[in-house]
Image 1: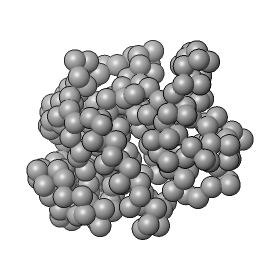
Image 2 (image 1 turned 90 degrees about the horizontal axis):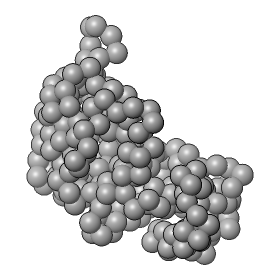
Image 3 (image 1 turned 90 degrees about the vertical axis):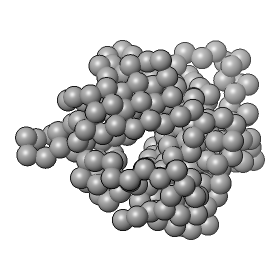
Image 4 (image 1 turned 180 degrees about the vertical axis):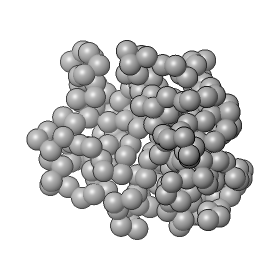
Length: 226
């Protein structure tokens, strides 16, 4: 599903943020990528979604080599990889349903398709009764659920969650992780990038640990080591 081969990236000559990283993530896996600030996690996310380019190495998603992806191709990549962030990135003047629909509108989807898909993904994330609310009218957990619904509209093969529980209390964080696990059971590959030790240890799933731009541990059923 995802192959990262000898990936290196430096923003200056003195320090590599990715230093010869190689790893494989299989279809249907649930993988946590962990590490302290500066470990290289964020840069790896940016590489996977086409926001940054490698200096050396190769990244393959499915049958698609994205190592030298063009700006024109990035939107197509991001339909294969749904992304959710710590800060939700919802549009404040649109309702939750409108935020979800907007992801389809910008890709040129028909009204009929939007009308069909939006209620479906809102139901998956448990927001069918909140679709008319605005972001400021709902909790942080509900905002993140809306962001997950938005990420699901293109039925991505991969869901990349970058610190999705960073702004949430323990109860809401656990609910978001449970939702990601349910999505994973549908066959979607889930990559969780986090520094939340409790979440990672509770999952008992594969854990890739990064430090100083390198993969220092890859455990099939692991714990947060650092």
